[in-house]
Image (cartoon, rainbow, N blue to C red; front, side, top):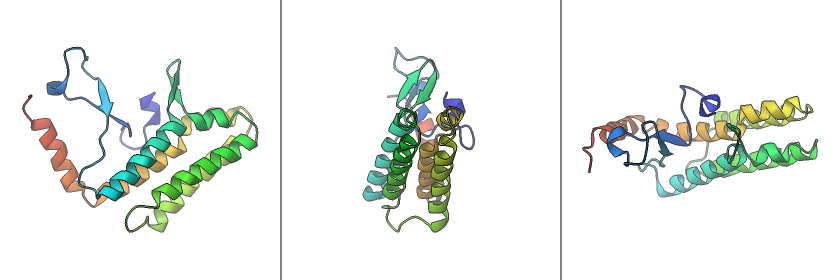
Length: 172
């Protein structure tokens, strides 16, 4: 299902593969771990990014049923109209939390986040089919990825160097 969540270059916003040299004896090749929050961000931005990541994960992917990942947002949206309004409010709370980063979010990114959330709401108003599309669309995870890319954009070189160091570290 992680492949269905891909927004961009086939990346999973919440997990990363464990390098072969860090695998434990009981883990198979390709095992994943929770993606860490970048350390080069300020403490405040790390806290905000972690809050947004946790909220987005709970709203979009916390449950797994027969290989399909869905969250509280999908469950709430099963109630016609009222569930969609509640899901909209939860999505708006996630955007409000994302705006608390140092320096604030640029208006362009805020409007992209609003468009994701409004699209999720509008499609959710369609009975049954809209619920299925919402499960696949994962607007909150998309909003988390927008925030993460914005925060790491200015530090992209540092981020790439950190990834290279992680790959080149000898096993302990």
